[in-house]
Amino acid sequence: MFKHSTFAPLFAVALFCLPVGAQAESFKSLTGQGYAVGPLAKNKAGIWGWTLMKSGTRYFCEMKVGVAYSGKKGMIGFTSSGRTISIDRATYEASIGGPDASLPQYEDLKAGRLRASDVGSCRKQA
Image 1: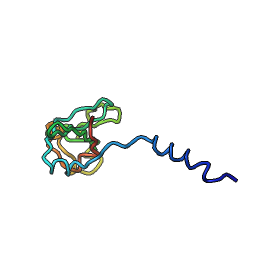
Image 2: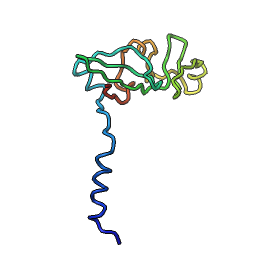
Image 3: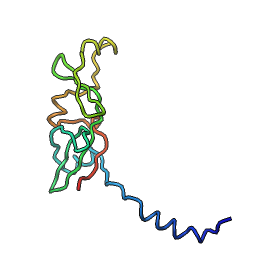
């Protein structure tokens, strides 16, 4: 069998070489600290979300919404590839049995008027 003392230095080196995770915060916590919410945009990876800023510190908060109402008769869907698609609202509501009050308005998302449930994780930007 192998001795533990042989692998201890290798384990220590491997542990210190692991990448350090990005600092994450919650949207609710950041807005509570006075961070200003920017408009809806895509980051460099094509992920939809919002930039929160305060005193030169920036966080990018990912969007957790898949579908949103747009105006009185439209709907917008967000794909994992960063695209938006138009959805027929009448067909959607007929399939689920009526309007879905839990869905946000696209206009609110674009303007940065958010509910905490619309926002996923927030990561500090360099």
